[in-house]
Length: 68
Picture 1 (tube, rainbow, N blue to C red):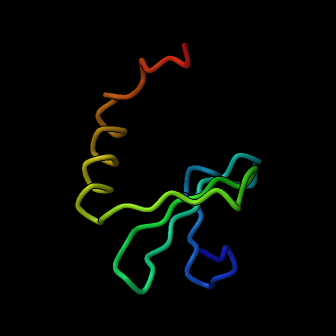
Picture 2: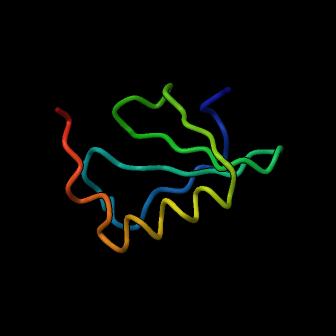
């Protein structure tokens, strides 16, 4: 998948800082996500699954995840 597209939208919470999150809807109706530090790494999912993810983030359900 190419990262050069006009459809990428930056999260309003990213501001002008680094570590920005971008999302785009591709031609196959998949939501694509990338982070500014590694723009070649793109995650893709369905709009329904993305909605579940966004609701979990807003509810704080993912605040306690650890890298360990």
